[in-house]
Image (cartoon, rainbow, N blue to C red; front, top):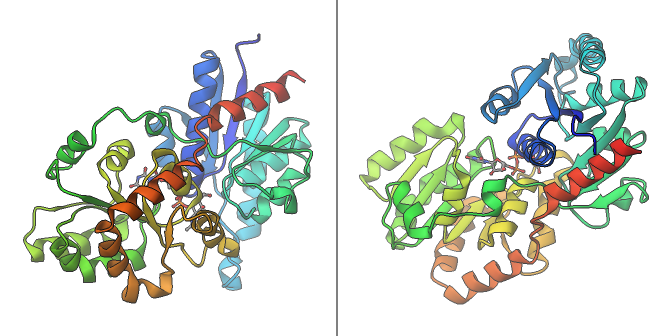
Length: 368
Ligand SMILES: CC(=O)N[C@H]1[C@@H](OP(=O)(O)OP(=O)(O)OC[C@H]2O[C@@H](n3ccc(=O)[nH]c3=O)[C@H](O)[C@@H]2O)O[C@H](CO)[C@@H](O)[C@@H]1O
């Protein structure tokens, strides 16, 4: 088998696109160590920081999203798009990939479009239960579309769909640390019930506000907390914690060691981004999902409903945070049976071999 596969992986914008991309890259490297992998992302976006941290090279395109709610913000859009298309062509011509993989996010559009033009094979990985516009367009020329939810024929040609699940980072697939050790690693008590709050890769303002207002009640329910806030809320969160003079809250804008965070958690409050949902399924954690209501076509609500319809998670709407979030947390924390049932049911959604199955498809496509 040819060991020198050349692969471009393009996309990003948020962790939900970047981390699956990194998981795919790691799996390619594990199976074909001599493969050459280049990422193509969007300048100024999260991938430009996270991809090099994961050990891969990345080129940034000057692309930005099309603003559907404020047309005036789009004045420079055509210029950025043309510049990105030209740069994408240059990158593709220089790197000469055997395949270009699109993981969603701004950069995947120009990169995969130009790959199609140059006759380079493409494959798409769609993380959500509701496909984005770019992926729908790109899928027309793609060889395969790897999806994470059933019933995706609504969006893609059914002959191209492969139901693989979302590729999750290897350290989450096999968590080695015990719950007690994980709790200690966050400076928390090893035996106390622990609530993990994650607002997706960027943090969630409305969840943060709800938690700030109800933190005292959460602590009164004997819980300790790992609270991921995102960059914009970290200072307020630190102030809230300082005012309560408690050592039972670990607060951080971003958690790199998510394996430890999941291991420490007895229950989780989370946005319903596709990767968060896939990871919670894999680690089998009882979760309260608060979908971000403004995600394209409200896809987070769809992601969440796929679980809540099977009693595999609890749904609290964003608009109901103030009235219900803290009560739901306290109620769930005190109900051992419900915690167990949710954990057992969410585990049924786990797709632990997603990365392997996607890479198999990549190899099949490149061998054709
Ligand atoms: C606002 C928005 O449009 N969000 C989208 C974005 O979400 P977002 O980027 O928030 O993505 P997900 O919830 O899918 O994934 C978050 C990822 O970040 C990681 N993580 C998170 C917090 C942290 O402190 N450390 C850390 O490593 C998680 O482990 C996970 O791997 O992409 C997802 C996948 O296309 C979509 O479903 C979401 O709707």
